[in-house]
Figure (spheres, rainbow, N blue to C red):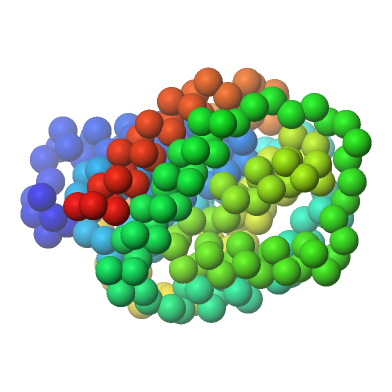
Length: 251
């Protein structure tokens, strides 16, 4: 089934449920859910050209809600956020402007999905001790790389930023979630602006997906900002990412 084929109501409802679930899980840790949306859309055989812009639009909606929830709970750190964002925004715009050929795009996205699955499966609880802030030059360089990758693929970048900050002990868990949420938001906007022409590829049922994403994002962000444990459900989500990643790589 391709995007041009008529979608049955049952298939569309099932896709909405998947988007809802992804939004809840990802927003609970401050992510927009880009890699999860790409996974769900790929599993439902949505046209490859629609994956990137649709994921970016849903990313913007959900990360906006997550940013508000985590910031309102007092977890946001401007000092940690700004150097990564300052370099990532222009690079995300450049990445969004670049249209990769399918033989490059599909393996790249597939590899990112598998990496995301590994990251989710290996997620552990981190102890907020011995926090050290990164130097501005290091943060700027890393932010530029993450921004370019975000714009190229339609993944907001939080799936890479969060583990980096936590593993290197550059931020506390909830603080990292708040920073990742706004990082995803600004990079998703920049990536979409860099390739506005791709909006014509968004499927006609995208508004229904947006409603599901907003509901899921609101629930997940509210629970996540109140210290909801999410390690187990994030590992379950990794299974979906593995399936979609393999499909992008080999189908």
